[in-house]
Length: 285
Image (cartoon, rainbow, N blue to C red):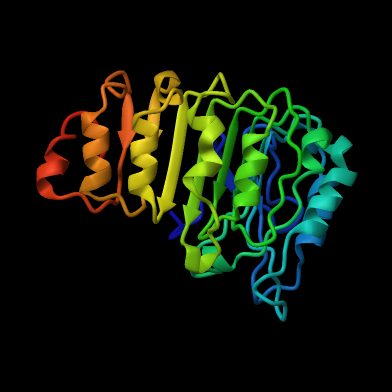
């Protein structure tokens, strides 16, 4: 959720880097860079300083927090930092995890976060296993062709269907896919039709964990997933934080394709007590 910054990432404790010396053991830490309204540094200066630190080549996990600086508009994006990261890719030969947007609600609402073009990352960092982004405004993933990318998480308050299409066309061995779809009032243009290849099992043969969250059409997603081909591959299914009602709940309860799941996450829903009881003992509902 967006009420607190992450404290661990890629199974490593997150440590803030604001100046040289703040982090010395790069192999055991996930380093976070973030700006604030009362400090002079910029995301570019922070990143440039970080990349010159002794031992930086051991870094495996990097987090970008707030990149908006004093006097800038809310929709400023991280493109300059992404461009520098790619230009200096040789400094981070072991980068395996990247989170672009550890930004909480008191810093900027998720639906206001200005994102950028992530497409240069895939070729620049062939060892990347985990990519996560928060905010959908201006986000572009491009053509994802990657041999190691295992986890892809995109959190938005309103997702443009172009992002879903880029995800569905990804050529990567994803085992965990998590999409926060959001609300039409905040820019969501997705529909069930955008997930056709996913539901039919035509993409991501290694997928074990799927979460389609934060949607106004959660009932439709529940029905489609409950009757899908892909659900047979999964160990974990998430349909949380959306407008899931008894209609979608009944689709899940009636399906005989979900009994093998190790986890069914329906956290934050609109199920009645009667239908909620139907999931007792088998899910976090």
